[in-house]
Image (cartoon, rainbow, N blue to C red; front, side, top):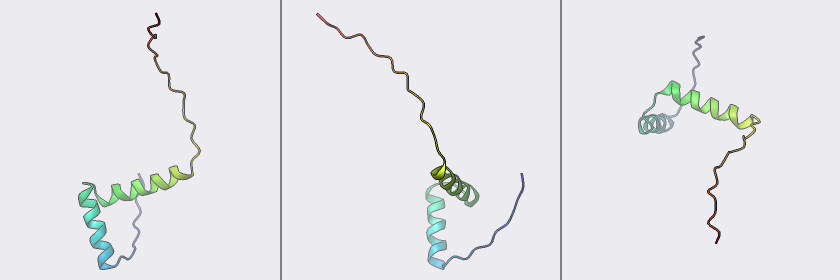
Length: 62
């Protein structure tokens, strides 16, 4: 796996909010960033939903 470091700036309030969110979600910064990237990539991806095979109960007809 390739590793790359990026620096970015946050205000003290943004940093506090980010730390609280990461703590609340019980995750770490790297996993949080990965989830954001995945969400954005999947947002633009075209997906096809497969057919769901449902078992239907026979109806009781008298």
